[in-house]
Length: 196
Image (cartoon, rainbow, N blue to C red; front, top):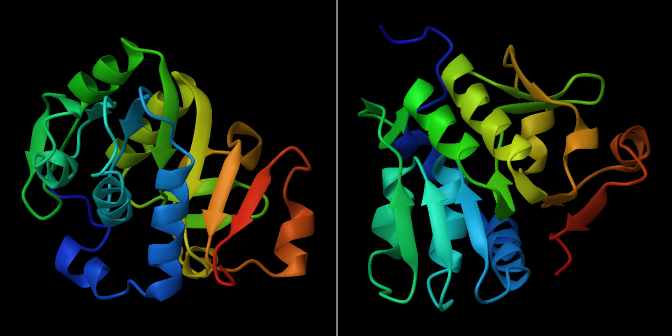
């Protein structure tokens, strides 16, 4: 049964990308070393990060996102392992307990997630509890946790808790104002891509 608060389908989300966001995807890709094992989660943002990773070699990618698998299919030097689960037609991914079990079976070097919305007090939030569970599983089973989210996520409203910002190591964004920056943990490495 579809979730009433489900995130917008991909065609709508794809129209919101801009130059600063693309700079962020490239920045994330540049920070992933050759030979790394990487978990990639749900959403069109993560698909665009995957596209930025296409020229890497000897990566191992774990994902539940079929668009990620398709984006990386042109590079035989990137091993892609895809989870089973319940297929969501509008999102081209799979969700459910099989997915969380899949991510819980590995420890990766990098876990890259996005989020439906951000809140200074509650941290990362999502539209669908199944998406939140996927992101939590990635966060719990990786050595370095990377968040990619543009400034519009501060004004979105979603209700499923993912994690507080203390569970994120690096935050890639197009812009963050001083008020939001000072509300985040000092341990969080913020990479602002707008001026790049």
